[in-house]
Image (cartoon, rainbow, N blue to C red):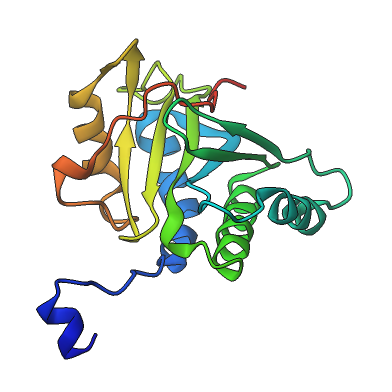
Length: 198
């Protein structure tokens, strides 16, 4: 950043820290062992397309890159806030993380790195008969692209969340993931177009 940027209060765009995504598989093991939660096989990448840039071209490129034998198709949806969601599925958490990384990288290469908001990974209750404090509802791990950190999001109903469960999950995965320390950045994602049920 130059002197004029400092004087005029301009900041350099922050690039997404994609390496943090690869910590998710170890956190998934911890969540299964300690909370009875298993990956849902679904994730979503959220971003705001810049005005005037054709999303259709990037969409086609993403579909070609992610089109592998037997892979589910990529879904694109918008939300009421004007953001776009790229919904992906995979056979396991490693596959989901790889596919999310490809989406992030592709959007960065298209020049949209500053438009990336977050990625969301679904978890659902699994067969947890041997887990004493098993969680009985789906929840999400949200990856903040520009900060390279995660936070748990546990919606319970229409614009309601289980903050106590979120804090419990933070303590469980804190040694596996870079967890967001600033709780004010644990944004609720109401109307999330990602279903964590199987």
